[in-house]
Length: 445
Image (cartoon, rainbow, N blue to C red; front, side, top):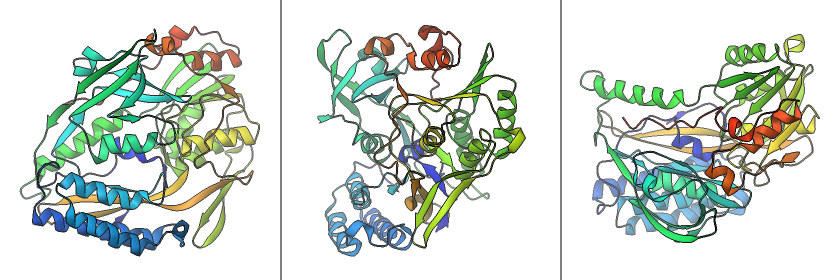
């Protein structure tokens, strides 16, 4: 078992990048064989042992994890497919109802591309991105409201679990939608999933598998590119699009050095799932002229303050606005809330995800030369703000709430960024704002 550093990530980040995993020995919908059933049982036992050893609450919120294990082990014994077995292991972890504690299954030998992205806007769900040259491009429209997906109503409370199920645990061959168009028309659509086939098994030994190993690294590099910082200088304002908290100190300091040349800084944390605690602390230290207590880390060993050290005279001292939305999670929520609590600036947009814990990733391997990798994300600490409240399941409510209408989404307008610019004295049309940071898809090949 390998342990990765502390992360303040939402669960969905693992669908973007992270652990290099290889394919399972059969497709997940085939009838499960004896070897894969034994692997699934081992995975379940690893999940139990890791949670019992590392979960921040030794009482597990009153759940008897051993009794629960026996129940779910029986279910793995009865699972008819590998997908059923994986869902059972995931359900065991889901009993804790913790956004940062979950099962990370082995990657399949194929990648599923749905061709669309959905997002909560306020309490409604919308189609916000459509990939060209997919079945989705023929059947869906930006601004369509998702009333139901695969027979289930879509709501904010369970959205992260839906995302985890669709993109990581059990990709579906088709998505069955009930939709409401911006004009109010209700219709049903079946959208077929595009599959990108890879090698079913990968040999990661340098003697025989250097091609496989380097191809995995290349795939990760392509995905990491989407997490790079982007920025635009608009008059005397710097607009910084930060997709995740993955930068090192020098990278954060460089961007803040650019910001110091401007009177105002807009930090766009929309769609930002979080990241590393060290990056969060460096970000906070770069916008305050004094040390700031972010909150307290509550662990099995007790309570410990989490403090961001100021960069003093090197910190940015101008006006500050932070943009968030329903996909802003973990570290991005903490940054936004600190700005609010310390009255350092304004927060604009939609209420954030409410997925704020500190997690560690524990990696496991079944097999040696031909390996199957899987992992557990386990919360090691709850993070309580200086007002005595946790953001978990609450999120951050912006100072200025700006929700795009279905027509805004349909026409790729960005009223929230336009409002943020207005607050610092710059007029940007919402249509122009919507073109500043074009959405980027992960390359298909």
